[in-house]
Length: 194
Image (cartoon, rainbow, N blue to C red):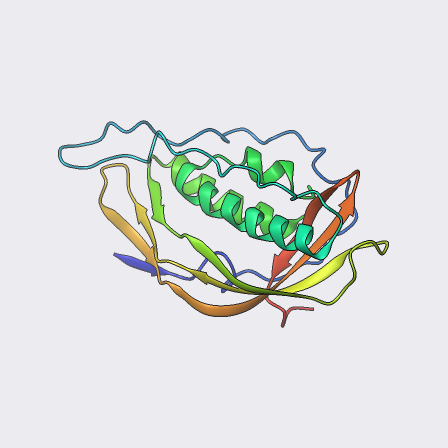
């Protein structure tokens, strides 16, 4: 069994992409849930009945609470994507120029395309601290303390192919912008990347 680096923050760098129109790109192919739940004896496939998180009330408000609600929801969508390989909900609220997001989605899709699936990887947002004032023009950076549970990469027969260790409380940064009456994630990653 192979051990791999944590995908969400530990091995990805913030690329600072802020130039594209948010949410305009069509979903890339392969966004549906991964292989069916029929596998070899005693193993189960990816959760076929997994539903995307519901959009919370107040998420589009151009306020501190709106931004925090959106940020928590965005990470719920990221968690959902790991276990479902359904990236349409995340892409709908993410700028198409987010290279970090593209890298995460590409790596996960590659595993599902091989016939495998992923379990775990639940992301918890412990705290959010914003440096900007919602209502001002332009992107707003927020420091976010995240934890992520262990990710298990299962092969097409249901055997563990790789494990990504749980991420302890780790500081990350998000960049979001409020436009067209909603929040959009521009990028996320390690605050040490510049």
